[in-house]
Image 1 (cartoon, rainbow over the protein chains, first blue to last red):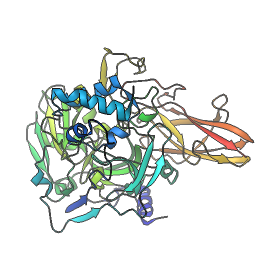
Image 2 (tube, each protein chain N blue to C red):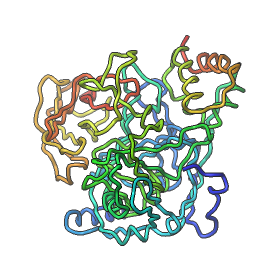
Image 3 (cartoon, helix red, strand yellow):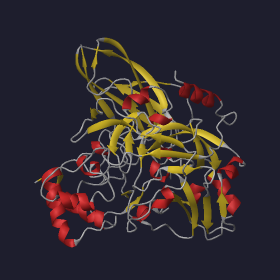
Image 4 (cartoon, rainbow over the protein chains, first blue to last red):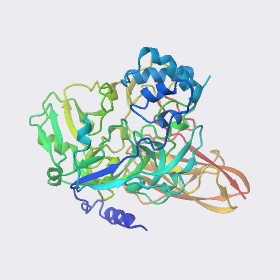
Length: 108
Length: 398
């Protein structure tokens, strides 16, 4: 049993009788997140638009882990990202993005 | 909360710092049982290697085998889910404040030291993402593609939300209570993540502002230094890095309540795939679920008597019964329930079955104290929420 589990077991033993030894935390905690951790959009026509507009808010993993969505579904996703999610995708880039996503991550 | 970039860099110097652990020989990957289910296994700060769904915003899934280790999910194995990439990477518990305002008689600015002076409550409770198991939806839906590891069970320690509301004093016009955390969107045009509860729910005896998780401070990625605990309810309401409690005199109409995290307002909260135009309500209490934890789908077993272990939970009524089937759900045998850690906790169970040579299909079904049980067929909804179907495990016996 690890030390952490022993700590939890001790805490559990006190449930229902008294408070555990837990106290309010103090001071700063700092972490360093890994950015996009090596994820990148697949190359292909329209990839610049994907890099420009999708990567503003999320890594390409959000796209590459989706099931193979249809053109209609990718169209709906791009529309959803513009509103309500507020992505600043210009009107003339929508078709480029949908074509790229459908070709690289979707089904015809 | 919306943060300017400089706020992310405020606390330098003596901070306890954690960085990504280097991966030796490249990241291992795990293939989850659905299309595009390959996941790198990566250790984020304060975490052991977990299944990486998306690095930005950070979303990490707990490998399912962890749930076989004990009733409690260790902090370093607990799944991670953020909506927006503005996750502060430095947070100081000493200077952190929770602002209480809105339809109250006294606005408050509570420090962690203030919480330490209030009555402590503590219990075990399951935290489960609304979309846990979304990738198993049929037909599949867009969204965070979780297998069943976007859940965990922990001992939470903190103070009653009700005691905080009492200290502020509610005005007669109070209708809902809205919660906001330190995280924020990248773009100012993106709706900041905020969630609200009806007053009756917010004033329940056990809704908690928690400062400890399994007897230790919360990992930063699970909401250090304080998060809301709404036991029995899906985790969307368990706002992390809680920084503002606002009492509303109206039903919250912000995007994350009005448009997101909604379920069909139909008898079983499902609709025919592709349906539109149906009424919806905010997602709320968790549905009853059960899992086998010591045998994976696709496992090979030895013929003879086999022990099966697992967990069950529901939205707070507690588990009345767990049954195991070794013939794909035709016949059922009652499992033994293990120690009861309270109605909000995982309930461990075990059973034995006679493994006969050839393919066999195990299935597990829980029934809650409120009478709810798990359906054979999962109802569909457009967001892939509320998964509670009977889980099955195909095994080969040699």
